[in-house]
Amino acid sequence: MAQVIVVTSGKGGVGKTTTSAAFATGLAQRGKKTVVIDFDVGLRNLDLIMGVERRVVFDIVNVIQGEARLNQALIRDKRVDTLAILPASQTRDKDALTREGVSTIIEELSADFDYILCDSPAGIEKGALLALYFADQAIVVTNPEVSSVRDSDRILGVLQSKSKRAEEKKDKVKEHLLVTRYDPNRVERGEMLKLEDVREILAIPLLGVVPENESVLKASNTGTPVIMDTESVAGQAYKDAVGRFLGEDLPHRFLEPDKKPGLFRRLFGGRAA
Amino acid sequence: MERAASDAARPRNPFARHGRSESALSSQTLPEAFRLRAGNFNLLVLRLLDPRPDAVLPALGDQFRRAPGFLRFAPIVIGLADLEAAPEEVDFRGLVEGLHKLEIVPIGTSGGTQAMKQAAQTAGLPPLRAVGGAETEPAAPPPEAVAAAAPPPPPAEAVPRPDFLGSGRAAMLVTEPVRSGQRIYAQGADLIVTATVNAGAEIIADGNIHVYGALRGRAVAGAADDATARIFALNFDPELVAIAGYYAVREGLGDAPIGKPTQVRLEGEEMRFAPLG
Image 1 (tube, rainbow over the protein chains, first blue to last red):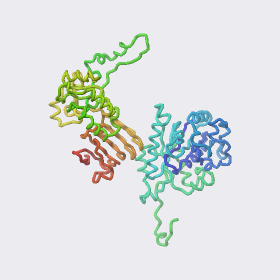
Image 2 (cartoon, rainbow over the protein chains, first blue to last red):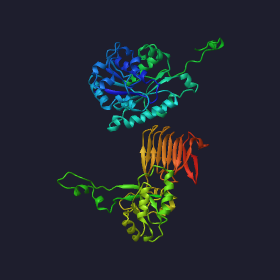
Image 3 (cartoon, chains in turn green, purple):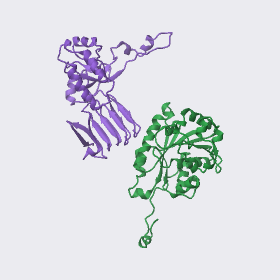
Image 4 (cartoon, chains in turn yellow, brown):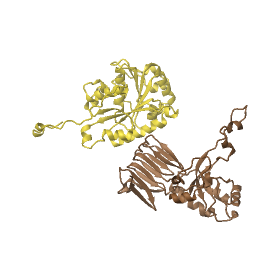
């Protein structure tokens, strides 16, 4: 049986899709058969971040409405052969997703894959609820910022009450905290919440901290999951997080602010860009 | 209003004495259709001081409006012990009707004279017997007073500590963080939370509230109008606190010890914040 993992946050723009793409790719690079599903019907983005937007023929709504078979809609990644993408529809209404339809798709994918990642839309409406409904595990993506933390807190409550596991009174969904866009320099200046504060409020195990990094934007624009950029700190942070997810004990990195500029640079006006 | 444990069936009840009485009651051949079990409940007692429904109902309606929703369809016991009136002076039918209109469900009576009980029974209010023969006070009064007034403990039960008598209230225990958007109500009970209560969450108890973590959301104690209820928090950082309908929002907390272990209680109409420990 495949493990169903929802990538969720409540708030928009915190890095759910970036995380879904990076994480799915990371798992697949480790040899796990992985499929990532875009649940953001109407605002699909995952195919762009994954660089497969020109190969989309059918999407999840076509499959649910019986207009295409699942295999026709699945896009096999050209870089990692254990990775597949099920895109969302850009033109349909969110109501086209039904619980029965999604259930059938997940059941069918379960036979062929080890991990099914569900990239949730923002909010706590139908699309987000469907994305988390079948989850065994949840990666809660949070920015070190008050409104993001509160929305994550809200979505954790929803996971505990509205997921299939909660409804069937099974073991609760396993929750992981992933803090993204973390900038230790701004934390030090008091402009961002400290990692400890975020952890204290949300009180779930920390999977990783991804630093704010320009490589993420570059990766999005070129359609390459940032985890493939092994030089970048964000790519390395995602790689660590995938390792921890698979049970490895890795220290958290990129939590300290940059070194203060030396006397020489301060004297001669070396301005940090 | 006070709280009392109603006794559906306590030691003298034949059903409760034998552990397996339900199997003796059910048929041998047919599949089991029901089970009779003893149960203890915490109920609100509406102690009547005035026999006229016209006097009781409007005041009651006012009080319930201050805590809207909390008591909707809550079962209530009519306390007759304090009523100084003849049975025929009390309009039980009118009272029952009026209570139903307020969305309160009277289920029986407690205390009162034999004649009074009978008068109530004709209006569909059977007499209930409080556990130990007396209603308990809503919160612990000074120990000496209670020890003197307390009934002898029922036989074969653990002897209650004298300093704990009078607070026969159950407690609801929450061990997981209470998250934004979640709402927990401990009806007729104290509420103990051993984790944090996050901003945007709401915890409500008819009794006291204890938070052994940070209290960052809203806490409403004494929701059934118990002004003696208190709120305790290890890290006091709430959005709002309320006791028996009196409330203070964060802005009005003034010099409360924010971020510190704190106790909140009501003194008259004033909310008091005191550091704990």
